[in-house]
Amino acid sequence: MPATHEVSNQVPDLVGHDVAADPPLLEGLEREGAGWARDDLHAVGRLAGSAVAAEWADAAHRNEPRLRTHDRVGHRVDEVDYDPGYHALLAEAVGHGFAGAPWADERAGAHVARAAGFLTWSQLEAGHGCPISMTYAVLPALRAAPELLATYGPGLTSRTHDPGLRVPSTKRGLLAGMGMTEKQGGSDVRANTTRAVATSDGTYLLTGHKWFTSAPMCDLFLVLAQAGGASGATGRGGGAGLTCFLVPRVLPDGTRNTFRIQRLKDKLGNRSNASSEPEFEDTVAWRVGDEGRGVRTIIEMVACTRLDNALGSAAGMRAAVSRAAHHARYRSAFGRTLLEQPLMREVLADLALESEAAVTLALRLAGAQDRAPRDEHEAAFRRIGVTLGKYWICKRQTAVVGEALECLGGNGYVEESGMPRLFRESPLNSIWEGSGNVNALDLLRILAREPASLEAWRAEVSGVDDRIDAGRKEVEADLVHADERDARRLTERMAVLLSGALLVRHAPTAVADAYVSSRVAGDHGQAFGTLPRGVDVDALLARLPDTSRSA
Image (cartoon, rainbow, N blue to C red; front, side):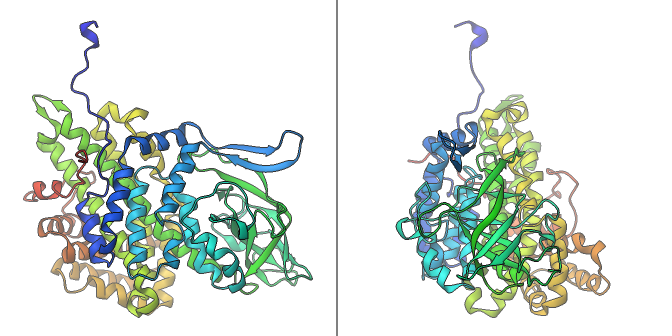
């Protein structure tokens, strides 16, 4: 081989390790009440770090979903074909209980165990997490329709992934999606024009067009439509208004429901996961909850998917920082590895700190999810905490992934590094389930209508650090005259104070002090790698995931 083709100073593939060998993740699992799931989490982590799972993820993105509207002889089928790697990822996620299984698990900490597993497995590939998350989220909403819950609940809580359309009674596993937004309204779902007309047998017939319905191969969907033939945001024309409906792809008699997929979206990222525009025409649906109460009915589903937005963004951060640290351990420049270079260590320590705060907050929210049904404080905290976490963790993902990509230099700009896929994925969770403005305005509504939630936040952040207490008092003073223009600043500040308080309570002193001094006290530049002097960089780097090869 010519001398110019010698390969040296290149970084080995990041495979053969345990993704769950991550101190903040494991500590959070124990602290939030799911220590019993540690062995299972490590099994998931080893699979997520394996070469075969990496091949599934790569194949799912190389061979993107393909819409097949008709069969060979011209029958309308509206099927989406996926690479087998995508179904392999789904099968593992469902099998490990990351879909609806926790709702059938009576063990304390079941939702925390699921959250830790979802966070670990999502670092491998995020696209298939969309139907997993929606399936998890649909079950609380179905409590408003006990008969439908009895019919579909066993399939939704199953640990078996069974590709292909089946009648619910014969299918061991079901996946669920949701169809809320329409082209004329987007986040303003009350502007929906899809109409639902009641029939004599208790079902409804839906007619309309949804603008962004992900995972169209799912077995059933929760859909918002104007009941009583109404149109427009206020239900004018005598209708009851926006109502929640269950739309199955296959009807109980085995025939296909009308679910015409007009096209698949050509998206920035998340390309392994199909997102579609379905059209309904006399599509059979069952009402979930009362007529005119669609938003209230589906709000529990939104709360669960927003929790998964936070978990998914924490996963994306951790995956990117792990790749950056792995590169720095092996790549040399100017006679030393990158990890030995003082400025690179500052950058990686800062990224490690930001991603640890995200993991810690996300798992605290999962703990609230688990305990909310039996603890009033946790229920109140969950309401405000999920809004704060969804906004702030998702906002930070793009900044963290972009800086982590830069740690690899030109190699990070190449698809084979895995960083471009993480970067394209990074804005998604901040947009899904309400973009930043929607979440910030939700916070103002919570503060105005639910004083118990503000009290829950105050209890979480008070009395742990004088600098955090000072920040809390500033927030409380600002709330007196806050309006919509202040919403983002308040949401950010409250999320940072909450993250800092959690680290003070639970993380090593060096980690907590670094976060509070830089993020809360404000001694931090606009870019990563600008931590205050005196921060224990070694202690922060020690908290990075262990990417050494498994035994």
